[in-house]
Length: 103
Image 1: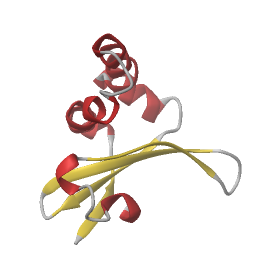
Image 2: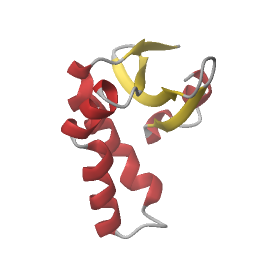
Image 3: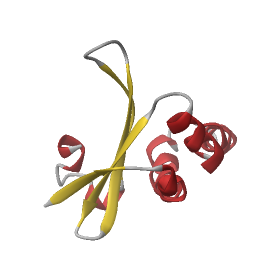
């Protein structure tokens, strides 16, 4: 069973670590390694994750199976009662276990 908790800026390193495990695998067939490296630095440096949270209004939620981080989602407010889905990624090991649906 998965659990979810809201990430804080203390979780920036964990989010980056998860991204390093899932982002390249997800996009390796459509992006070059140079493009992946660029995207990782642009979106997933600890500095940029912190900026997304503190300045851009992103809310990250982390999914866990027991004590192991399994994936994350990022949303940002888009009006009064709406949110824009920015990112949703699940580690390959947990794909197919409905973690993405749970997020």
